[in-house]
Image (cartoon, rainbow, N blue to C red; front, side):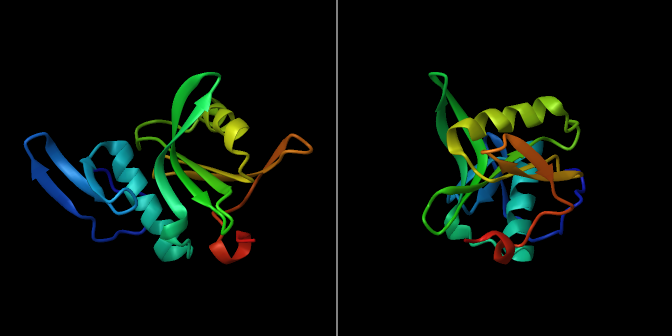
Length: 151
């Protein structure tokens, strides 16, 4: 897999009849190792190990209804009251982070109303703060530490 702009860690891999799988500790199951999943596992590890996010307040592949269609958020981080705090959207390293990706996560946020949105392809990471009352986004310089955003 492609080296990422994220800290390396001991990732749990195994071979199965379906191909290589990676263990997702948030979902507590083995899933197919795709380029996007490679980014997800590294980014979740980064949030937990480097930024201090509590894994018990994180979930992968969260389903939601948007205009009567079912969609899935890649990762949602909840605050201690279990309200969405951060939505993270992942793309494979070969996929450029474009306005279309931000439009996608903004649509998810119409349902979840999280104040922070993050997009990463494993090489480039973007984080913005959403102000619902003003209807504006402000990009942050870096992915914040849990201690700086936890209510």
